[in-house]
Length: 117
Image (cartoon, rainbow, N blue to C red; front, side, top):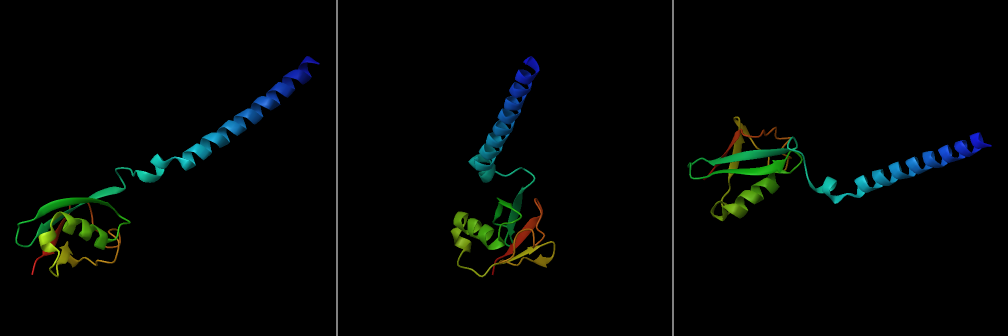
């Protein structure tokens, strides 16, 4: 009799553990903190330098960001460069504006030269 009671209690506790684990998993999946923030390894800083050496500025971004979006952030901060047809070079290669930062193989800390016409 006592053995059956203990087995029933054990089964109830196992079900409770499963339910609590599922509840924790759902909360983690719905947690906006996990969806909004990125780790330090995912973030990089692109260092822009203008060819006339008047601009030195770093912009934080992710490898999955389109370069054109990063360029827009640069122009938001420095609107005087917006109306020009600027080209960008990194490690001797032209940066393609409609590819991602990762596809352009841009790295944190490596200067990106903005050729100002």
